Amino acid sequence: VQNLYRTRSVAGLKLWGQALIYLRHDLATGLVSTTLTRDDFTRTDATPDDLNGIIEELIGNAPEAKFVLVLYERGEKKVAGIMAAQKGQDILELLKPLSPLGTKKHATFTLEGKTLKEVEELILALVRK
Image (cartoon, rainbow, N blue to C red):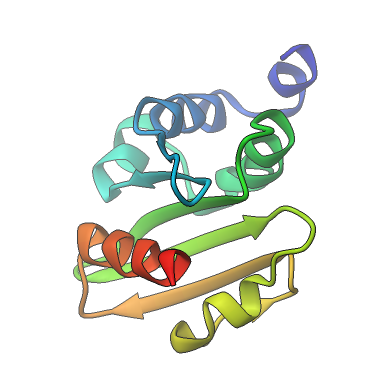
C-alpha cells in the first residue's frame, strides 16, 4: 500500500478507489472484474492513463483470480477493456471475437455500440465457454 500511495497521483488513487468499490468476483470462472463510467473519471479528475498498474495489482493480490478485467467508458456507447490472466490462460485466444491487442497474459480492446453492462455480459459468456 505504501508503494502504491507513493507512486500514484491523488486522482489515480481516487479512481482506484472507485474501481475497488465496483469490484466483483465470479467464483465459477475466477473472473475478477470492475467497471468505471465517464462520471467516475470526471469525479476523480482521472484519465485512463491512471489505470496503469491496476490490473497487475489486482492479479497479484487476488490469488483466486484466474482473470482480471477492467472495463471503462470511452464515450457514448464506446467501451474499452483491459484484461489479464494467470499463467496457463490465453487472453488473446479468449478475446479473439473482440480483436484484442496485446499478449497471451495481457490484452486491451475497444467495442463500439455497446454499454458497459453489455460488454461485461459478453466477456463473462466468453470466459464461461
